[in-house]
Image 1: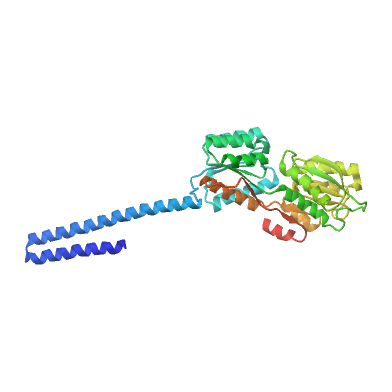
Image 2: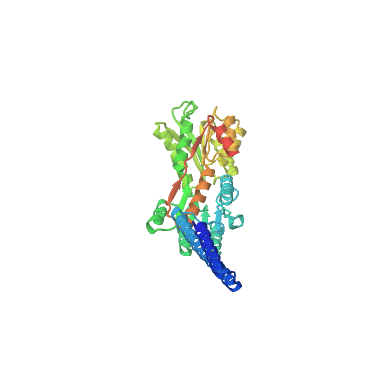
Length: 384
C-alpha cells in the first residue's frame, strides 16, 4: 500500500511537469519552473512516505512489545543469572547444573558470560555471602540450590527487598514458606520432584522382587536405612515413604539401623560395612536415599561376600549412570530417575517467566521414573 501511494505521487508530479512544459511553448524559464515543481512534488511524496514508514515501524515495535509482554516472553540477551549450588562435588547436582547452564545458554538465549555458577561448598554462610554478592551486583534472577532449605525465608526476603526473583531447585523449602510466597505475592518459586514419590518407588521395587524383600522367609523385611542429610526434606520423605510402601502393602518390617550418610559414597560404604559386620545375614534390604550412597553400600556388600538380588536387596535414587548400569548388571535392585533434564529446563523456563513479570505457581513438580531391569537400558541411553 505504501509503495503504491508513493508511485502515484511521483506520477502526479511528473504529469504536472509535463503539463507546465506544454503551456510554456518551449520557454526555458517555464521549463525550469516545471522541473522545480516536479522535484518538489517528488521530494514531498518521498518525505511523506518516509514519515509514514517510520510511524508504521514504531507502531509495529510497540505492537511487538505488547505482544511479547502478553505472552510472557522477554529478551534475555542482557539478563544476568546467578546460580549457587550447595556443593559442586555432589554427583547428581553436577549433572543438574551442567544441563541447567546448557539450557540457559543454548536454548533460551542467555549469554554465557551472564550465567554465573558458584559452589556453596556445603556451607550456608558461604552460600549466603554468594547470594548477597549477586544482589549487590544487580543480577536479574537467581537460581538457588540451598545448602540448608531452612534458610529459604531469610534468602527470599533478601531477594524480595532487592526486587530480584528467585527460583529454588532440588531442596524444597517447607510448605509454610511456599504458602508465604503465594499469599504475599513474592516472586519466588520451587522446582523439583516430590520426594515422597521417589521413596514410594523404592519400596515398590522391593515389593516387586520374588520374595517381596523377605529373603530369609521369617515373615518380615529387615532393613537398614542410609539417609542423606536429615535436615533435607528429600531425605526425610525418601526415608519415610520407602518403608511406608511396604507397610501399606501389609508387609511387616524391622528397622535394624537408620544412620545419616550425608549423600556421600565413602560415608555410606563405612555405614554399610559396620552394619553388615554387626547384623550379618539378618540384613535383607539396604535403602539408600541416593545412588552415590548406594554405590558405597555396594562396595561394602561385595566386600562382605554378599550378592545383590540373591541374598540382599539394594535400592537408591537419582539414576546415576553407574547405578543404572549396576541395575542392568544385577548389582543393584533398582533406582529412581531423578529427571535432571526436565527439572533444569523447567527451572530455566520459569526464570524467564519471572523476568517477564509473569505470575508462576509457588511449587512446580516433575515426576520421578522407577528404574528396574525392564527399562534400565532405555534410561541409560537417555543419560548418555
